[in-house]
Length: 293
Image 1 (cartoon, one colour):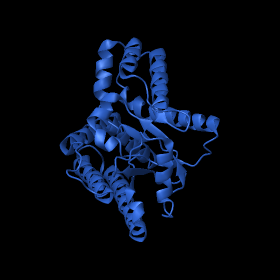
Image 2 (cartoon, rainbow, N blue to C red):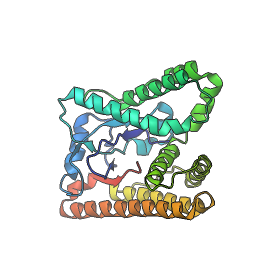
Image 3 (tube, rainbow, N blue to C red):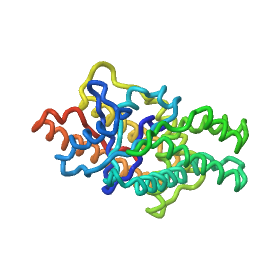
Image 4 (cartoon, helix red, strand yellow):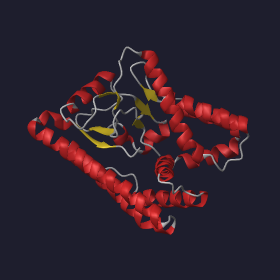
């Protein structure tokens, strides 16, 4: 599942960053001024977009699963005027709607829901994403977990709720398959339903193999990001090893190109920031890597 502190991708450029504040307990549950400070630390790197922050918090259960990393990660979003509340709220709603439609439409596609049930569930999920997004105007605390579960159960039933929550634990993999599906559609080699199910199964298998562990010991922000980048590269490598059993040769080639480009991008962004840190060590508190989505 997605990390509990998540920045929705209101990016003007192709690069969305996950910013890691690993020292002195700096995290994004802090007031917005800390987010603004983190943004300021990155502005010297010309490859990085100038951004304000919109933070998406996860549920209590998400936070328990990966608490350390969750308090350290974020992604810059498109720059907007802090005083423009209406614009901010509209953009957050648009992003939440797009995210729910892209990811949850896959997650619930095998549920036998009526049209009205589907619409009600999607509306509730969008509401939850909006509530879990911190901006200058909202805390991003999200829905109460029990309230959310009860409201979902009221729409789809208690039995389906348990299945839904079990699938939601692999939400990160549903996000990944949605991205791959979109890429392959643009290449005119869309996934069949069987391929989608098969590749998703492989991604879940790889994620379980890698785990969601944190690096051991007291490490620097750069070391933390290097660890996370290694984890991302290893995920890509293992998925590509398994992909030929599910995808066509052409689809595998396209997936390789996507993952190779992402790997180069992660390495390049880290190198840019290392050079910035070498010029000004105070920038070492805030180091980023491109998010997967």
